[in-house]
Image (cartoon, rainbow, N blue to C red; front, top):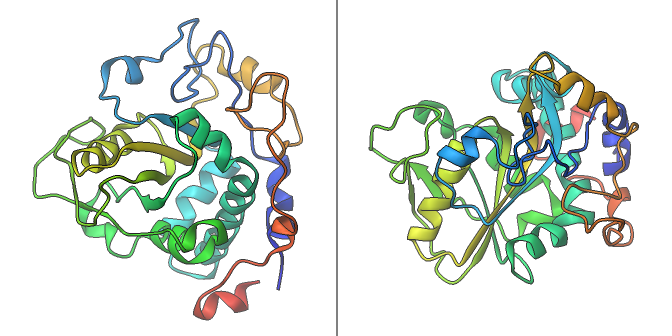
Length: 266
């Protein structure tokens, strides 16, 4: 069975690691036109204590296609993408979960959950829940499916404190919220609002892809300056001039736990 390192090896040439800077939103790592906070973060709800995107997901490019295919295709191709994205999340968190915890002001996350799908009818079978709750070793023992879409009518892509409801005991917990894609951040921020209303003390989000359009303003120029191949030893929340702590021994060589027929895909 392939290891985490083997499953993520092809992604080293397509992931684009966010880095802080003068033209980067200090909250969500969006590329800006010289502003410290992007428009969505400045004008939307801000309930998350920290956000840590693994990579930029550029519209029309490879990571964007993988993130779309894993949840829209129910065939072997879609399931394969799901396994690979789980490995990306595993490898990143093995080395950098502590960076996100420090940014959120906690020693560790005691509970993990996922952002529900924005479409109520798709959430029940959304593969992100299985990725966080079954496939990713560093998460599965802490995972609880805590959030569900509420009956409140909320505009799509806009922050709303009533969009989700919490159905688990989260009071007193520091919660790591897992999301696959961040565009405006409305869903993740709304999910954090529900968790905090239920008593969570801190909520931080790890996001596989921070969506961008390459042809907006100076995005292409900035993206071309990002280091390649992808450096798994650093994240956007590392202290300046320092790498993150090393992953636990053997983490990259651990195989994901693959339920059922996913075994035959790898």
